[in-house]
Image 1 (tube, one colour):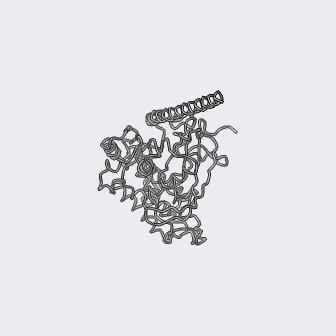
Image 2: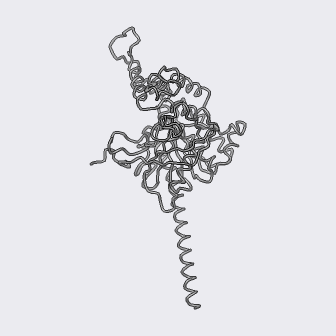
Image 3: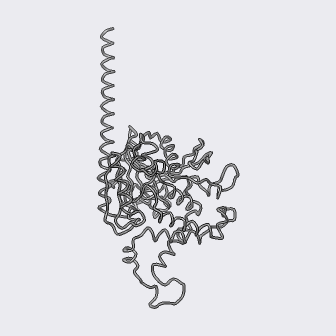
Length: 408
């Protein structure tokens, strides 16, 4: 069978890891046990030093690159960035994508069965934070025998996780690529998230989060939440260019049915999302966004909060992104410089709004590729140092063995 996606990692399989060690969450609750679903691409080198963790955003998953044999059209959400010869080159790096706890793509979440009750967790599933996700990811790295990541990368909520890695495990990560993200949400973003949550919880089919028992789906609430979110992910210029004020028919209908192309597009996106995403997961993910604020413990001093980090940073923003605008990325860069961290910053002129981090943009991809080239050189230098140490050790052992024989 021909590869349906040229230059891709090809057909991939999801893997599952179960953990019986309780995970104490930041909210004070405990997950007695849990599972993480993940995928890997490329080969882990002998030194286990070339691992790159990809952290997903709100609606993402572990399926980062490649495609499934049973459904070749289901391509990983960052397949344009990850693969052989791509910016995150799987010929050089061992790449891991993980579905976060609380997700709805296989990892333990609200739709999973609680072993204590035999029923889906539903509303009983505890709130999780970016710190909790990073802690569970670190346990997965332990399971895979990876003591230190060459890098962690993510966009939006994924970028927040990459940043948190440098704070939670400063000795276990070499670089963080924080793309289209912020060190904390703006008031406006928190407001958008709450409106989306209210759309879900006010749906009669939500049943207080226990809709599974009622064999219901709060599709209307999810649809509205997604429609609102989708508007914020796109720039005004892109919406005008793509849809303008184009009508579905030649004249106004003077009713409340779909009349404009943009209305049709948003309703289609909302309907599609409501069929595949879990309402409780949407609530959890948006709350994790709201809670993320590394500087909270330092009285709002981000530079002081970042002082614990030892990694190098690549921070990128997009000029048309009004949900996570460039000034929020520049705040991070300023704090990193103040705390004397190595940081590379790119502000990319792209018309696509917040979604630009997911899309093809030659300049953006070239910048990521150039940064990852430097990461690969560090990994290669480490491999060479290891090889030299091993060679020297072997030589010393040989000389010692030889001297002992001569003395005998």
